[in-house]
Image 1: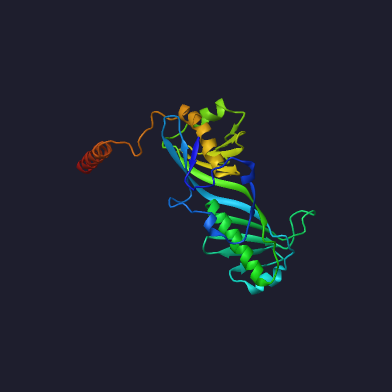
Image 2: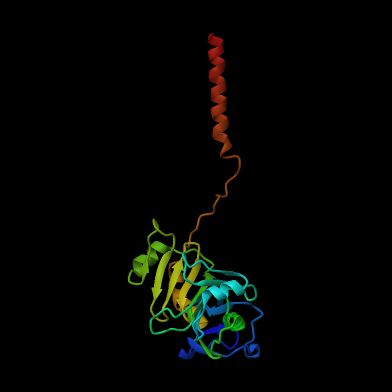
Length: 270
């Protein structure tokens, strides 16, 4: 149904959602030369490219962390406990941002927890988590070598290539779609299987969010594409309209001639 350009990460198993990452072994992952791009099949035998814009994931290091010590000893970090109770750490390569908490987000979890965002491929998600693990270890803590990493959200964008009638789409699929142009210019379409959310714009641009795997983006788009083709705008007016340049100036010329004739008559009467 879908082909993923990042090899080795197109499996649909549930184990892909939560995986155990071992300390640095980059040979087990091969980055894609095409970048974070997924090919989804359309109804006409062609393909539509979906570009991944962000992947949000969480990791559990299994040790309680001293945020003040991390902020003092690490570069590219921000820590203001009065505003936010986590250390903000950034990486340049791969470009990623981590929110490091001293303990778990729940009472049952008392170990250090990490939220990584800003990454655009699963390969870079693994690599960023390993680098954050290495940094925490160099500061002086003892994180577990096999830590759990779970992908929480994958965001992608696509282009249908044609404008869409959003009013007709929301009328025919009112159960799954909602459209309030006064509040937001896009139509919100919620797909149940796979469980993702589409933001559809009249220009044909689409944002896909809520997926747990890269393959969910392609599978969801392939299901929705026939619906988008059904509500395709057929007759679209060109803007600006293709008219000759002389037509708008003709009325102005007639008005100016009439004004000149009236002014000449007034001068003769005087």
